[in-house]
Amino acid sequence: MKVFKFGGASVKDSGGVQNVLKVLQSEGVKEKLIVISAMGKTTNAMEIVVKKYLEKGNIGEALQPVKEYHNAILSGLFGNKDHPAFGEVRELFRELENFLQYNRSTNYDFVYDQVVIYGELLSTTIVSEYLSFCGINNNLLDARTCIRTDSTFRDAQVQWKETQAQILSQVNRENLTVTQGFIGADENNFSTTLGREGSDYTAGIFAYCLNAENVTIWKDVPGVLNADPRVFENPQLLEHISYEEAIELAFYGASVIHPKTLQPLQRKEIPLFVKSFLNPSNPGTAVKKGQPILPKIPCFIVKKDQVLISLSSLDFSFILEKNISEIFSLFHKYQIKVDLIQNSAISFSVCIDNKFNNLEKLLSHLKATFRVNYNTGVSLYTIRHFDEKAVAALEKDKKVLLKQITRETVQLVAIP
Ligand code: ADP
Ligand code: ASP
Ligand code: MG
Image (cartoon, rainbow, N blue to C red; front, side, top):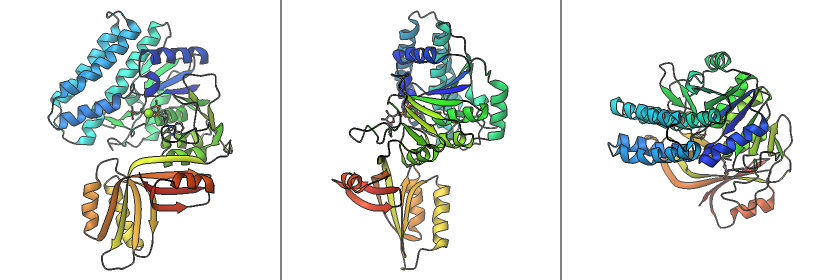
């Protein structure tokens, strides 16, 4: 059995959905499970709906473009408005509006998960109906009945035992299953999400639980490149890399693979392929056990919009284990993701990702004990397998605030 994942870019319009069919036809439709994200930028649009809702703004206005976008895709695929897919999509919007009307919670993370998951429910409903329409028999599986998680909304942790049991009892291995990426449910059956871009991780979870032969994530790039093509010129394709390399690249911010995806795959040595959905017969990148990186060239990664915080003691006392452990328990409390740490006798610097918007709370807490300096909007640049030329090229035209070098990796926190 094989697992495929199609991201937002691959199903951003009706042509994209038709291309999913083409890929399946060339790869075979039997013994497949396909994980699908929300179409195009729908999750961002849903985030606006959540914001408007909690600000008691005009939700109708925020939802309208999402409805129009999905209706345009439906029309492109089915033409005739009589097709049941139109009614199913209407029903999903009605369900969402119902939630918004009757919900009383003002907890942002909870509301977020109950709303944004409709992006994935809409996309999979449309794709599943379209495949059936084209004569391809498939089962639409609600991932929330399989991906069982704790109740950490927006960053839910998978409960592996229950998830495995559900997947094994629900997935028909012989057939084609269509399911949602990114979403799960907690023990009260409230929807949860696995973190932005988490659909790749869903593919990893299903593959692990099903002992899949391999996983392919279909992208709008030829595979894993040695640099983010949106930021760096002339990126080159990596033909193969090890799990460790892929985890490092993803962790430092190579957004082509969600960092959590590799862990379950690596545990069972399930190969991962990253391929272009536009050129499915090209080999793309293979991520496998023990494969040295090929070609061995410097890899450039950037994480934008990070925060550099520097703490020093108010009385010039040393920053030691006790302070550091207190600082880290605050990071944990405020869901701060730490990317890089550097310390000296009386100062401690950390580059963080303020994903959960808790920076203000964290800073006011820290200011009670430390002198605090911070820069928002900085970038964290990482070069794996660096050489002097690569570092010099990266440092050019940047104000470097912090630099760290280890055997394989150089990291810079810099403006811009
Ligand atoms: P999806 O459609 O699956 O959501 P994403 O947009 O999340 O796809 O990820 C693919 C994008 O990741 C590419 O279009 C590319 O701009 C970006 N990207 C960043 N780093 C890399 C890299 N090292 N290799 C390839 N693509 C990268
Ligand atoms: N739709 C979700 C997001 O945009 C999950 C994903 O695409 O992987 O973050
Ligand atoms: Mg994505």
